[in-house]
Each structure stands twice: as C-alpha cells, then as structure tokens.
Length: 275
Image 1 (spheres, helix red, strand yellow):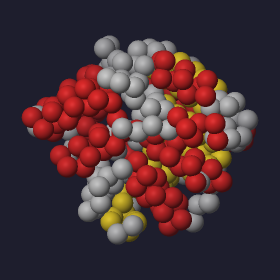
Image 2: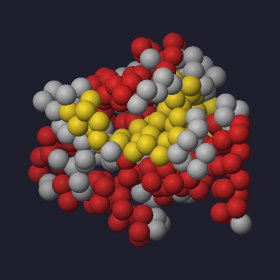
Image 3: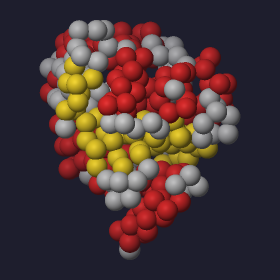
C-alpha cells in the first residue's frame, strides 16, 4: 500500500490485528527483509513494515536523507494510520532510527528492540571506513554492491535462497539515496541520549556479526538503563534472516511480559514449527 507522507509516496505493509509492531529495516534494505517476521508475528499482532524513503518502492524526495528525516516519516505514517503507540523493532540503521525516535517520541514507543545496531560508530569506521564505503558506492553498480553487501551481512554458511534474497534486496538500491543514507548512518551518534531512555529495551546481535560486532551491543546494554541483551546463535548481521527462528523466538520472549496473549500465540507457533 502507498501513503502520501511528508510530500512523497511511502510504501508500507499493514498486516494482522492486535498490538502494533513497527518493523524498521536497515540501510539498503526494504520491508521484504522482514518477511520471516511479518509472516509469523502477523498471526497475533498488527505488523507494520515500510520501505523507508529512498528505498525500493518509496520515493526519494528532494531533502537530504537523514536519520531524523526517517524518524519523522515513521511518526507521520503512524498518524496516517491512526496508530498512537507501538513496539518498535529496528535492525542496524533501523536501530539508529529507533534511538532518534526516543529523543522526542518516547510516549509513542511501548518498547524498543535494537538488533545488530550501534549507538555510534567509532573511528576508523566513521572516518576512513566511511570514506572507503562511499568510494565503493561511487565505483560499483548497485547489482555488484548488492552482492558484496549480502555476502558481508549474512553468515558464511547461510542458505543459498536466503543469500539470493538478500542480494536481490540490496541490489534494488538507487545511487543518490543509498549514498546519503550511508553517510547519515556512519555519522550517527546517540551516546548523549542514552541516559534519557526510559522505555523497555531489548538488544540482540548475531554472534558472527562483523558489521556491528557484539561489543557495540554490549555498549548499548551498559548505557541504556534496564535494557536486556541476547546474542543470536549462528547468525550474522542479518540475524532476522539468516537465523530467523532464533531471532523470532528471542523477540517473542521479550514481548511476552508486555503482550502476553499475543506473544503466547507466537511462541506456540514457533514451538510447533520446531517440532
């Protein structure tokens, strides 16, 4: 579906009934990257997943892409859908957007899940590393870049179908918005805001994540009061895709105290699928 949000057309999916889960994808991804979560959690939750501006089916707009602009679009989409609050789940850049939302919109956030994310990017990632990434974007086709990113973000022994799906998702990017979003991501720094986060926070990270390694999540866990952290086994940066069963189980268990009826249904489904 399309919504006219802040002067551009934004693509979103709205599936299921119940407490609202707002899934926010990472850099260069789109709503399809949450498919393994949408198909499960929509059975007892209302799931919203969008293509952020500049990604796949959503328009770019004329403004310089930034993390605050993404956050503004998300709140505007919630208003468009007449949703006051939701549980937010963000992976990588999506986790940065969640942290941006806490600055002025904690009343709209029932909880926050930061998956394979960071609170800031230390040097040299945010300096020399960023320069190298921008040079790759400038010199490679999006198809070539998509394959490189997918192989980096997925675990080495990932199923071929999942790798192919991830490659296809990243290969859909457009040069200008992807470059802008890359710069915005690597220059983000939310350290000064962590002390003021007072919503339930879950931090998950793939045990083999080379993009946002475990120590990034440990930093978040140590600096966001009351947060919980879990390492997803046999998973890399795209933990929601390359070990979706374990990722879904961890997320459902985190949500259970807040949404027991809906979460129990999901846990039962996951148990049955395992069996």
